[in-house]
Image (tube, rainbow, N blue to C red):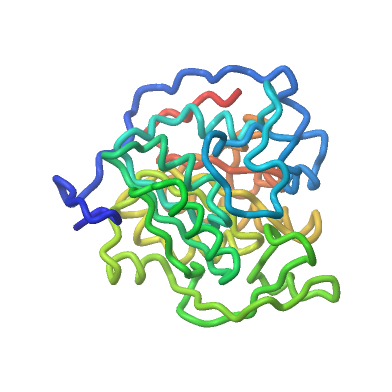
Amino acid sequence: MKKPNGQSQQTDQAPRASSAPIAEPRRSRLGGWRNLLGPLGRYRPGWLRRDLAAGFRNCDPLTVPQWAHLPDVSSSEERLLAALPLTGKVVYDIGAHVGAYSLFFSRRVGPAGSVVAFEPSPKTFALLRRNIEINGVSNVRALECALGRESTRRALYVLPGMPSTASLAPEARTPFRLRSAVVAIEPLDALAPRLELPSPDFIKIDVEGMEAEVLAGATGTLRRWRPDVLVEIHGATPHARKAQAERVAILLARLGYGLTHVESHSAVAPGRAAVAAVGHVFARVSRRPIPQIA
């Protein structure tokens, strides 16, 4: 099996993450600001976060300032990502948008690792491809595709002026959202072997309400390779987000994963998933230590 940049892997399975505990990241002086924002924290503007792609160029003219950040302001999610040992690993960035996280992962995995970035929106995918190109990144493979439970096509809806809200979830079809495209959806379990994708060590999922569908189409991949998983929970209402968190908890627990709510550090499990209705769930197979999240 080959890496996306054409380099051959030494083994069929990519190196697994170390079982050693992860060192606690530096705490931000404003570490709790994102939790106080509630659901709005998911759409924080660029100037209110420490951007993980700082130092890279951004071709998107609508991003002002480009890849901006405030010193000493970062979310729990970003501090967790910065603490994970990703050197030489394979990362799947599912819901890559214009590539801020893909570029961050590219830098963290280094030349021995690789990133596969999935983005279904044609307009956003063009920006993703351009950002990869202008930054001279060679270890990121971009795929214009959505992931889900089964092979199909579905309309993509987006809030006007907010391309990061593009969603394929049924609840996204509202009077406030515009239909932007009809895109292909594939289950990861079918797509990965067909495209000879490298086995993942870490998977990041940010798919605006499609979280459980993505995981349902990736159970074989998760069962075989046991990657760490970070899922951002979405939903149009508090009830929808709680239901989404419960579905995610059930799917991952059945595969032997232990779950933690990144923002509150609380354990998440089927029947006790409501705490994750706002924020992120970090999942790791239960025999490995869960990292300390500042």
